[in-house]
Length: 202
Image (cartoon, rainbow, N blue to C red):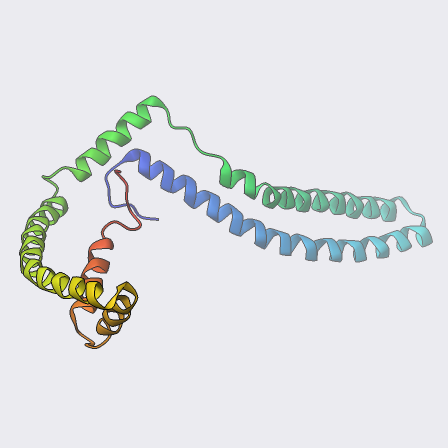
């Protein structure tokens, strides 16, 4: 994960996350290897045990004990990997506590990134001003349309009743593929994209 903000604390958090993800991937690979190794050692253990029972020599006993110890160690290693996976829900809930110094450093770095002198933020602010002007112009244009349409809707409702009013307005909204209702919804959706899902500061 690359964070394009100069911050030693963010680098530390990214490294922590990267190491954890690598360890989890390694864990799955290790489990597959260890399970195969245990199967191989069990077969080897049977063969060395039979050899020891037949020969009864110190050498065959030593080989048998070596395989036995190696199998036991491999089984313990496998259990460790399983325990690591079993603790994943707890790890996901656990949070890394930052020191006061780290918090202060991180705050300074984030504040520097969001400062108006940052070219990215400066560009955003300039486009924001243009957006607000365009939005105000749009609403000024919409005002007369809304006023006229509201009068027509009110007249239909007062004479024909609210139920008929709703039916007529509903059907009207689908009459023109690029009509008023469709464009209003499109504009609202475009504006709402700014608010979802990143409402960091409110």
